[in-house]
Amino acid sequence: MTILVFGGNGQVGQELLRALKPLGEVQATTRSG
Image (cartoon, rainbow, N blue to C red):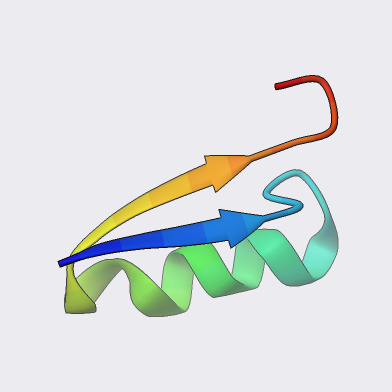
């Protein structure tokens, strides 16, 4: 499963990336792309 996280550079985004990593592939997007 691929999980898309918006705002990957922010504090909440970073925590989501860390927390969701065991569930599958995590892709982060930022304002700059």
